Length: 193
Image (cartoon, rainbow, N blue to C red):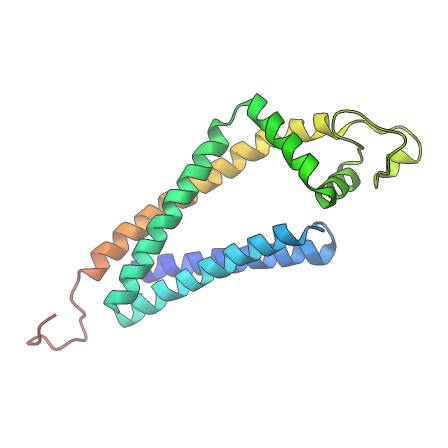
């Protein structure tokens, strides 16, 4: 039963991921289809994995539980690595990654400029176009300082949440392994396993 509870929990998390990404796109908070599509894709993948775990737990299906356990272990490894990287990144690495991300996506630049009311990354170019409201008054500040103020906090928050969920995943893998090795109570007691 506990294995099914973890699968239901991951099911709810995946539906929440899909809903938040769709809500962000619908409200126009995110214009990048790649970001929204990536989050929805990860949500659908987790939904299918959770569904396999739930069906495997309810039906006591050995093969589904095995694949659920293996996939969840792989997701744990990736999530633990990313969470640890978020918690261990230095300020210089943050700055370098922010600048690379800024230079690689025009839609992200427009989203950030509009939402943070700033223009340019390190300096404001009065001859360029900017979607921020402050650009008409020529009173904009560069976006790098504003972004860097929040990035450290966000990375630590995301890293902590990811670390928590990765530890629940390893617990789910252990419980699935324990449950998978139990005898099915509905099976004939005189039959071989």
